[in-house]
Image (cartoon, rainbow, N blue to C red; front, top):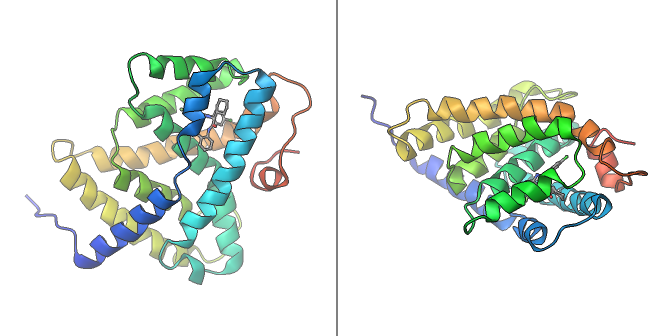
Amino acid sequence: KEKVEITKEQQALMKVIADAYNRHQIPQDVAKKLLQDQYSAEENFLLLTEMATSQVQVLVEFTKNIPGFLSLNHEDQIALLKGSAVEAMFLRSAQVFSKKMPNGHNEVLEDRIRRSGISEEFMTPMFNFYKSIGVLHMVQEEQALLTAITILTPDRPYVKDQQAVERLQEPMLDLLRKLCVLQHPQKPQYFACLLGRLTELRTLNYYHAEMLTSWRMNDHKFTPLLCEIWDVE
Ligand SMILES: Cc1ccccc1NC(=O)[C@H](C1CCCCC1)n1c(-c2ccc(Cl)cc2)nc2cc(F)c(F)cc21
C-alpha cells in the first residue's frame, strides 16, 4: 500500500490555487436570482451573458495566480484562456448546480434552468454533466485544481509551446491525484473519474455555440468579450 503524502511545496501550491479560486469565486447569486423569480427567455439570456462575461474576467484573474502561467508565451496565454473559458463556465455552473440547498430548492433550480430558453436537445448532455459532477461531492481544493488543470490543457488550438504548458499542468495533476487518495480513500478510482469529467466537459464545448444561438428568442445580442471567447456572431 503506497504511503501518499503531500510535500511542503505541494502544500504551498495548493494554498495558492485554493486562495485564488476562493478570491475569484463568482457569488452564488445567479442561483438565488433564478430561485426568486421566473424570467422570460430574453431576461434569462441577458442574465447568462452577464454571468458569462463576469466569469471570463474572474477566470483571467484566477489564471494569473497559477504559478508559471505569466511566464508562458503571451499568445499561448491567450490561447489557453480562449480554449478553456467555456469549459470553466460549465464547470462553475455544475458546481453551483451541485450545491446542496434547502428542501426542494435544487428541483426548483433545475426546473427554472429547463425553462430558461435553452433548446430541449441540449438539456440531457448538460444535466448529465451537472449530475455526474454532483455525485462526486468535490471539495473546494479539488474544484480549484480541476479548474486550473482545465485551463492548462496543452492541446488547445493554436498553443505553440505545448511542453511548457505540460510542465505547468503536471504538478497540478500530481497534487490532485494525491488529494483524491487522501480525501476519498474508499474510492481508488476517484482521480480517474475526475479526469473523465474533463472529457465530458469538452463535449459541452462542442454544443455551447448552438446552445446560445438556439436560445428560444430572436436577435441574440452578445458582449464583445463573449464574441471573442464564444464562437458566436
Ligand atoms: C452559474 C454560472 C456562473 C458563472 C457563469 C455562468 C453561470 N451559469 C449561468 O448563469 C446559467 C444560467 C443563466 C440564466 C438562465 C439559466 C442558466 N447556468 C447554466 C448554463 C446553461 C446554459 C448555458 Cl449555454 C450556459 C450556462 N447552467 C447553470 C446551472 C446552475 F446551477 C445555475 F445556477 C446557473 C446555470
